[in-house]
Length: 431
Image (cartoon, rainbow, N blue to C red; front, side, top):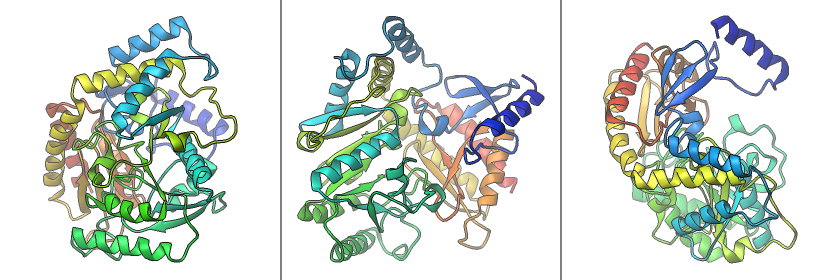
């Protein structure tokens, strides 16, 4: 397909799809195929993929084990719904329940992270008889009516109308806000005090929903133990803890299989949500909860597409590959190296405020030089320059979209990490 062809496709896109359906790049690209950590566009350009379709291609593009599982299952039966017994769904549910760390766990499969969080909110509010929800500032939980209303990021919340009453808590962003100058221990104390104070002014909330590492918010990380400290307060009040692991699950942070494990002193969350990486591109989301919470609904509920035999077969093959090849360990090792290289690359430019991250979940926050002011223009420029250099990355961040988001497939090699870091270094210096 010629470049003119890409422009023609862009025109057709604009004529038939919503204006708010954003595309990356001044001249958007059509990705036609991929292999391993690389993808190709319709013009034949090859790119190193450091975004994985928004942290979703978790193991590799065109992973033979997943492709084979999908095609074999599709050759048998593609769809039946949850009204019939479904062996791949039970198989994957058993594995996820065991891995979750939640005792007496029940698993419900959805088709997306948005739908998983929506279900978690339904369960928590029904279980507690409250429509009050605590959420973190700078958070993102999806694009449904209920999940935008617990999203603490104006860029991704298109309406103030909501079925829930949401109150926002401090703590998701370590290096900005009123407590940024404190030590980690004092930061946690201040955030706990803020939570205690908030609960003194409100009706009994149903739950706190929180991402252990904020994804769309720019890969911001609270000090380890923050949510464990919150848990003591929540537990006293009977408030549930929902851990949104849509981006942090399955070992991406390297140090832990789930993000909540960095805050594990007071046990696992009551509810855990997941999606993205488990399907390696197939539509899988899900909720794990204690049986008493999961079973609290007093009306019928099914899923037409959640737990489809094809997506479940993909999830099983993908999870098996991830565990057998210790991709969590690879994320820790190669992610540590990549973070070091990016810190060295960023040292040469005063437009970089911070390089942060965990495993293969790395954020580079850009500012106007000499200030703490977010620079979305710089983020857009580096995104373009990286693409010109043959690298695909993402962006995000609170207040303003000024954080580069780097989240390659977890099978990234050392050589690919070095190559991507070199391209990013040139892109940053082009500022």
